[in-house]
Each structure stands twice: as C-alpha cells, then as structure tokens.
Image (cartoon, rainbow, N blue to C red; front, side, top):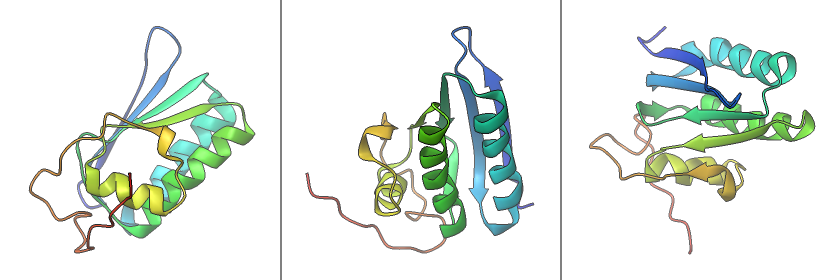
Length: 126
C-alpha cells in the first residue's frame, strides 16, 4: 500500500459512503475493487457515494475501477455517485466512461498534478 486508506460508513438513509484518501495507485487497486464489488453486489445499498475530496491522485487502474463501479451499480440497481473530485480527476473519470451526471460537487484542483501521476488535464466541452 502507498499509505492510502479507505473509510466506509453508512448514513441514516442507507447510503453507503466510501471515502478513499491519499494517492491511489496500482498497489491499492485490488483492495479498492474488492471493497466496491462487495458493497455493490452483496450489501446492495440504495446509493453508494464515493467521496473523493481527499484523493490526491488516481492511476489509470483506479480510474477504470470507478468507471466499472458505475456500470456494476447500474446492473445491480445501486445508484453510484462520485462526490467532490477535483476538476482534473473529474475530467479523467468522464474520459474513462463515468457518466457526467454521476459526478457531483466538482472542486478545484488543489496543488497536485491532475492525477498525482504526472498526467495532463483533459478539457471537457461545456
């Protein structure tokens, strides 16, 4: 692990909130994927929120994991939302196939590179 952590909590309305923290790289991918699949396929909350406010960067594997979680949620009737991504991470998520309506409360970039892995920012028309 790279020092990244993942907190999981359930709100009073049944929403499952998963909050990864730090720089998520390939070393974190298996644990993150396992957490998301278990939450969506087994716990099956009405909503799953990935709170990305404290994510400093995502590698391509984890970007793909978040995109796949949205599609798996659709298959399992679980509404998946990604809250508080930086604008650069939001751009990368949309490019990877995350529907724009799944991204909520997009924030400014906070001094890190767009991904924390040296990737350039992808512009989104709109």
